[in-house]
Length: 258
Length: 258
Image 1 (cartoon, chains in turn cyan, yellow):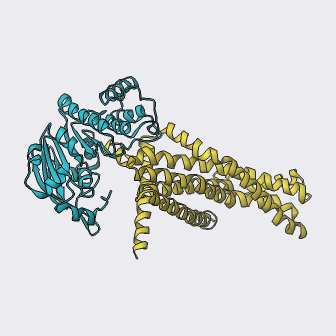
Image 2: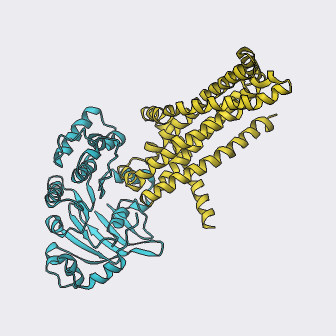
Image 3: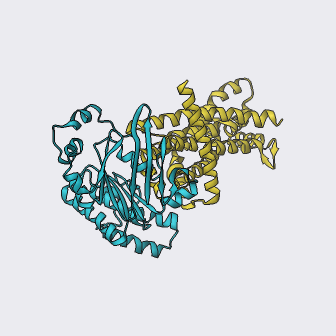
């Protein structure tokens, strides 16, 4: 369903991605792991056409995302959802209005139909009763779930999650992971999740890929990552202080360009 | 050289933004949002526009009036104040105030949305930020600049009349008769040309400075500091454009067409 072919991206002299290739099948959940600044979020932005790669291409159902005309890209994006790290809710709209936004602006549904759908997706992410609250009036975890509800409003076939559990307490993280699993089971959504939360990764992933130094250095089943002999992957998965990742991470720790 | 290139790039972006906003305003005008922005940005600037216009009219009347009375030209104070306000002072003053109150706010609002990923969120929801955020703002400020300039012209002339009547021994009637006569002097398309030209210039300048504010906001990057830079650029570019447009328009109306 999604095919990333030899994608490279640099910001100035800094190489973020170097000939990355990935495939995600229909209904599959791929989790891309890697240290902060390894290019995970950039990869996700390239997948949805927010950032143009310097080389390579991204195919969604055979269509090259970056070769599409503006209107066709909008139609493709209508089939995709994207959960931002911060939720990226519009602050002057209530949670309900945020969720209703694409239904009103893109699908142009009637008010009654929109209200019913808003209730439905808020309920799906466990946010019933928050419709009239402003984003500033709810917690970070609730904002993320509200962002997820907004992404789900148009019933996307593909969902991209940018660190869905970062900054959340373990229980809220578990709730979000459960929502991701439910979406896959109930709606058959194809997901690409960017994360460095290993517990969550092993809960939700069908397949895992690891980005390091702009390259995909490992891909496989979660069990393969748990039992890997690769010292880089093993150190990242276990979070060990000593290992090949330590020096590199401490020296570079770059902030991913937006 | 880099500074020059980036300035040209920003100017080009702003011009493209004007074109796209016009297309959106015609194709899908967001009247409710536009009216709300007219109230929030424009109408709330009315008190400051009125106060500045009142005192500017009073100062102009007093400064020029003292000399004109000495040369026996006291009768002409009304004509001078009215022409100065309608041709130049009203539009110029209104636009400068709106740069401080509204254009800077546009750059800050949209810039904050850009750095907090809200504009990216709109894009992935297939909602064009130009149609949703920019077009209503540009339309609102264009209309409000036009309306506030009418207010500034009227209040400025009244301010001049108050000083003429109380400080320069000229009656309200004589001041205002001269003011109206001079504006009626040369009709243009059935309207007093001085008023007409001043108001068209105000509307045009309002359109340009609104686009500058929105463009700088959309080009903001790099967190709070980036938003600050965007606001500063918007204010500087707007003030320069007010002066350039003011001169060009005056030349066009009073030299090229005569």
